[in-house]
Structures are given as C-alpha cells and as structure tokens.
Image (cartoon, rainbow, N blue to C red):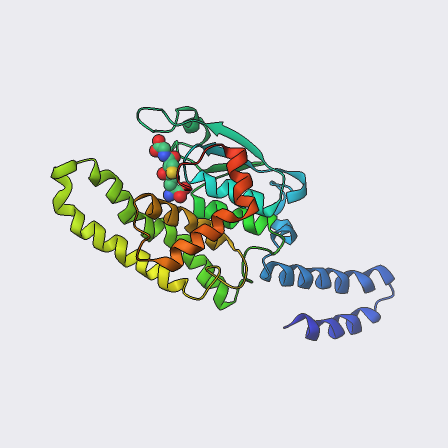
Amino acid sequence: MTFARRLPLLLKANVKSKNSVTNLYYPVVFWFQHLQQCLLSRGCECWNWANSAPQGHPGERMPILHHLNDSRSQRILWLLEELGTPYELKFYQRDAKTRLAPPELTAIHPLGKSPVITDGALKIAESGAIVDYLVRTYGQGRMMPRPGTADYEAYNEWLHYAEGSAMLPLMLNLYVSRLKEAGSPLHPRIDSEIANHLGYVDSALKGREFFVGQSLTGADIQMSFVGEIADVYQRLGPFPNLKSWLSRMHARPAFQRSIEKGGAYRFAR
Ligand SMILES: N[C@@H](CCC(=O)N[C@@H](CS)C(=O)NCC(=O)O)C(=O)O
C-alpha cells in the first residue's frame, strides 16, 4: 500500500487513541520512511541512515586519493576538482626504469595499483567504482543522470565499458609492442579491435558535447583515459568526434587544476 493511501487509515486509527504522542508518532515515522525512499530512489545516499552509520555523513569525512603519477588516477583527481569537494592527495611515484608502482601502494591495497581511495572506513579500488562512489556521495545530484532513467543506464554502461572493453586492445598493444617482431602476428587483430572500439566511441559522440546528457558526467571522466591512451598511440586521426571531445575535456579549468595539483601528466598532450 502506498504511503498516500496508508496515511488516512493511520490517522483514523490513531484518533481513537487517547494518547496524543501515539497519535502523532506513526504518521510521522511513516512520513520519514516515505521521504527516505523518495530521496534514495533519486540517488541521495546520505539519507540511507541504515547503511551510513559506520561511514558517517559525507560532511564528516574526506576522501584521500592515493595518486600514482602518469596513471588512471589522474581522472580521479580531475573528478575531485570538478566536484569541488575537499580531498587529500597522497603521492606515489612510478619506478623510473620499470614504470611500476612503488611497494608502498601495496600497503594501501593488495593489488598495488592506482587509483585507490580511502574515505573513512571505506577503501575503494577500480576507477569505475571510484567514479561511481564519489559522484553519488559528493556530487549532490550533479555529474550523473537520475537513477531509473535511460540516461542513467547509458552512464553506467560507459563507466563499465571504459575498463571492461575499450582498454583491453589498447593495453594489448602496449604489451605486444614490447615483443617487437615476435608480436607481429597479433597486431592485425589488436589494430582492428582498437579501430572497432574507437569507431564505436566516435559515433557515440557524434553531435554531442558529452557522453551522456547535456553536461559533464562521471562517464566523461571515466572515458578520458581511453581517449588519452588512444591519442598517445596516435590512433585518433580517423575519429574526429573523439579527438575534439578529448580536447574539450582537457581544456576544462578543473582538468587544468588537476594537472597543477598532480604534477606532469604525460598522457595529456
Ligand atoms: N582497471 C584498473 C586499473 C588500475 C591500474 O592498472 N593502474 C595502473 C596505472 S594506470 C597501475 O597502478 N600500474 C602500476 C603497476 O602495475 O605497478 C582501474 O581502472 O583502476
């Protein structure tokens, strides 16, 4: 039964009671439950008092980004700048020879990769999960479509697609290129998959300023690394929509601030 239909019945039942506290108590409790459900369905997690107790309200805690230079972590730094929420930055430097992350990152998360964020008792790895969490927790409804809409599903798809699909052939290109001649039988398939994915992304951006809706969302943030790596491998030539979208993203003041705060970033040219 909906709240609207339940309320008159509750009021009628309670009027019979002599106790004015009981008269008010149940309608007020049900009203709050109804309000909480409405807010949660709109993505306002701060009203989820059942789950938020151990973590505290966003106002009482601050995310810490464990940031590795020249890495996917740059997009999280950019996101934090877009959100304008206070955060702490902890720096980790790649080994100059191996380009691997330093062992200190393993103390933060067993995989020893970046990005990782900590926020109160929470620890989150994987860029897509981090973008999703930060936008939901600190976005105050900005940078994501409303849950339950078609735009929200598209947004969620891009969050997964970036690392789950688009990055695979780009990473294979990186590793197989190190095999020099020995890797040549693999390159035709890798190249055609890169073209397949970049072509798909390029057509999704046709006539659009952003991946989803009319303003910047977490989807743009998450997809930026795909565009950057493709650009580093000089693959953006045939994909003008993707190329110009990337330039627009890099021109944003918040992105520029992320470079100032994070230090040199070799994947933004
Ligand atoms: N799919 C993960 C990938 C994380 C990842 O591989 N990060 C790289 C930097 S781009 C890293 O930490 N590499 C250092 C190492 O492997 O030692 C994500 O999106 O967060």
